[in-house]
Length: 441
Image (cartoon, rainbow, N blue to C red; front, side, top):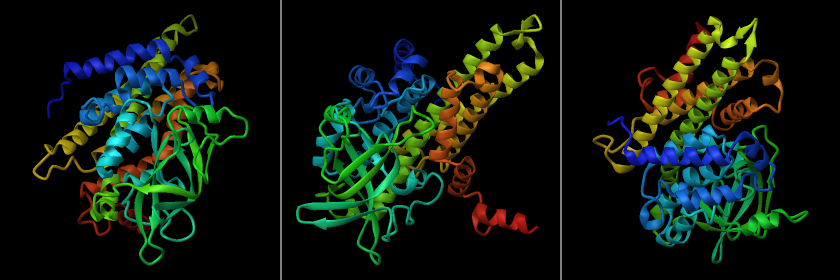
């Protein structure tokens, strides 16, 4: 492993940081999240058109930049530093990789260039708030997380000329505006139930925002699809509730043979997508923690108590030093997870072409924990003003709290990493069994 970044990777980070410093301050973030879309569409257009942000990890043949997970993680670190509200994670780390892996040639050619250029945005729709499970980050994804063929979740049934989806899903990232929905649904009934992925084209680019501005409109543009933006603690991470009532859909991979739509291929693709997404999200959390720590250090240098800056007190210095060590450890883990994901995608990670088992889940756990610690200390060390809900420290605090709810909890991420690495192979059941034995003792 070469730990040094290339000049191209440094340039991606520098260019993005300069742009976001000018266009994405705390006031701009607070204004953007209160728009119907939940983000600044003009800024997103510039990030997509000028920098090719959503297409960083997509091949050039499909309109992408032709880089990999490392470059995407570096970009996410900068967007996390600015707490940028955008559909980047949903589009570039969730929807696009699945279409690239499982989509037919027609689907890839029709969707990926538009996603890479920012003309369309996408997301992954998983029922029951089971995103982390579907991506195999907190446990195996071969269970009934998509409904199990029974009531609940999302069900799919074949009809002449396609499929129809019925069900509902909450906590869908950018689900109220995404034009390309990759929906996980069960088909085959109770006895032959299996999870497959389907594509729903919600609306042509640009029209979703116009419809969302109309009083009483749901912004879906598809018969039977109702999309409602949810009220969440972290407004910078917009989420939506989707209700599907016989929504027309297309099987992802249709036309490429039965193997392309088999459940084993779907679960494997979701797990591989989870590795890349976890690395990107870990880097994003590291960027947010770095910005929160930098703002806190600047504040304690200026805030005076007893005639001297509070940053001169040894107790404050020790707290900040501990945070710095945790942040650097989380950054190293995030970078390694991104490198491992890229090596696995390129088939150069080892004899079997696989990345380091559990590296992504472990990096995400460490990054989320570091962000939570830094954000909490930022609120404390800002004193009375830090406790006000309107202060910028709460942007990071809310991000830390909601990311762990959406993708964690941290102890389940670590347990999954341990299982993937085989640490409990001879322990007779893994972390859960060990925990039970400890209770009995």
